[in-house]
Image (cartoon, rainbow, N blue to C red; front, side, top):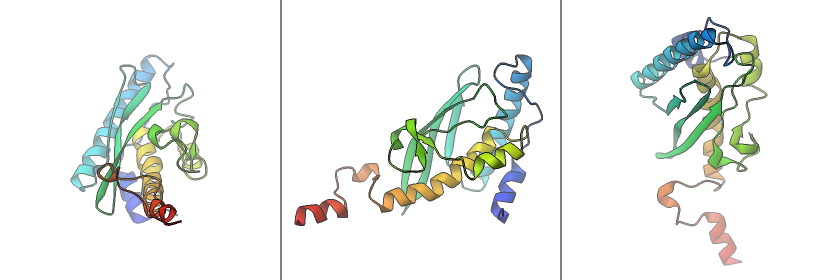
Length: 178
């Protein structure tokens, strides 16, 4: 089931029409243009709704993407580097989004900091090939992952806000008392 907010977000992201991957020459350039248009529209919609939460850029070929993403937990902004490569089988295969600095901090992550999208997002992507693109991966893959995992990691004391790096956690205090 998809909630109303998700449907509204999806409706604001243009669907892709060109089914092409990085090895498709001119067709890839056409697909890449569609990807940029969709990303720009999605970012603009987010800003209009006061929901700005990521920045992305790519290499010249559009095969390597990198930037920053962030979320707010308890009025504190947590920011992370983001990176992913476009698979050669794209758009049949969704990109594997990675937050390298969180590598090994949660079970919902693979080696290299790639977030787990297997159960929920990848089946949705497969049903919507070639219409989904990078903006859809951000909206339906990374955004929900951040919304669930980061507050959990903060609550467990696994990650700390940069301003509190020197501060101890409750678990540290308990160990000192023993």
